[in-house]
Length: 457
Image 1 (tube, rainbow, N blue to C red):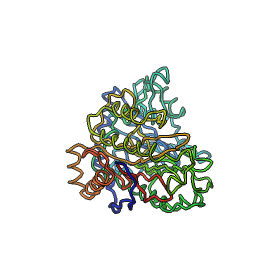
Image 2 (image 1 turned 60 degrees about the horizontal axis):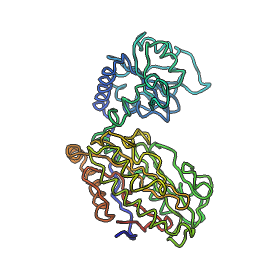
Image 3 (image 1 turned 90 degrees about the vertical axis):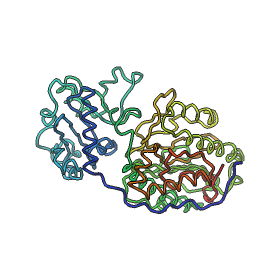
Image 4 (image 1 turned 60 degrees about the vertical axis):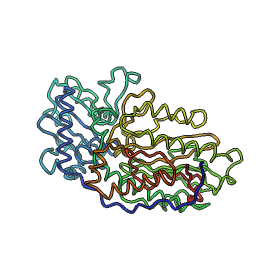
């Protein structure tokens, strides 16, 4: 039997500060990258980053460019980090730079427009780092398939001012982004216990802010006031905070624009930090009587099937399950004609909101221990609007759970409390292999002017 019940949203307590990125972790990642590039036959690997696309660079070094762009060139025995005027000093945040394993190099061309130039040109700086005529890899933030470009192997997704000198210098420059992000073999597609602790902290911060915002909703308040009530902390944003209602309700990526919260309007919103994206959608209402007549059965016809489907989604989050099986199950129980789901029903999350996804039609990529998975199943309907319970999880086998318990017992305890809440209070199928990272996991509140009404199975 499915029902609405009145409850306080769970409060698991504020996590301890997450562990810092250590030299040992950085050295292991750099070594693994060298093994991967050598296996691919690359004499050098060039990793590009800018403010929005810095995740691969940050995963390797602990450094992310602020304002500017940056380029890491990895050779068999040395690595150099090219940074602009303002980021050159910031490279010291990297344990690899501090230890002398990566050498920072000033490149003024990576600086902002109109700032002082001078010094060596980018092409001159690359010349001694990229063997002439060699086969090299270039990692940006996406790769391509044969249905998109003529030659996926050589289609680079970095700016032309970097791609051109690389192509002129190397014998062959290949897209190597998949070495990091591919859901099956990417180095970043699996995380360990320390990363789980970091992601749990980010998910807590985002979820706590979203809860503050939701419980502050009042008729007539502006969307700006709603976002202000969230009191978003100081963690970097993984994507723009959205708030879509009123005339912008159908523009899901809208930020606050001055719309007022009005009774009987659909709404969707999110708070995202590096490693976390907490998102909800529903109606500005206290019950079905506040909805337009045509949407009066929203809870029974739309919310409850979605909640049941998300229980099935959780139940499938086990190492060894094929991503294509998850896709097929979601299509079966959330038919497109009613729920309109067009994107992957779940994906990997990292510093960026979307790393890649093993879940797509026909995917034979198996879900694996260490995958940080976003429950990102986005329905949409012209009458019902949407519903959402988008939170972060990690898949973990016995060994990874044991390591987490040994190294970060408080993180493991909070995760177990969340899993029990989802099973016992909400009635969801949550296997031991699925680790909920946020206190909002399992919370689906359809009436957002009375969010203490929570749907349960």
